[in-house]
Image (cartoon, rainbow, N blue to C red; front, side):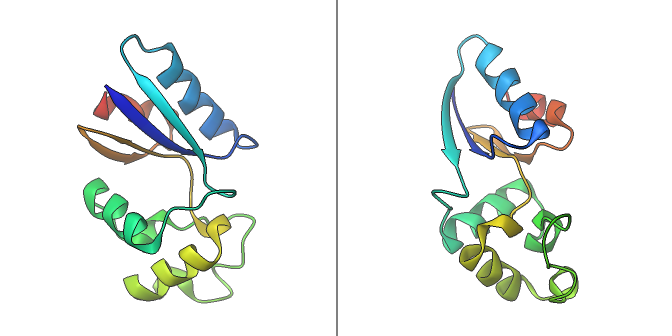
Length: 114
């Protein structure tokens, strides 16, 4: 099974999720450091749709100016535009497998799609 993780190596939750993926037999992991190689706006929209969540639910609030910018209450298009322009607004880690997408907070949520 292929799994893609949008990863920030400085984040403990992201590192823990990556460890779960790497230690799972039969999982081929594609690691995307999203701050260096951010997903497109369209990819973000697809990821949140497949995860069954709104873009606002995928906002990183800590360490960002998302609240000051009013993004938690903004419409989906505004949030997606902001995330595409400033990937630090993307909460991590997002993991995609053939079984679905999860925002892996806590890291064990990745088990739902393995």
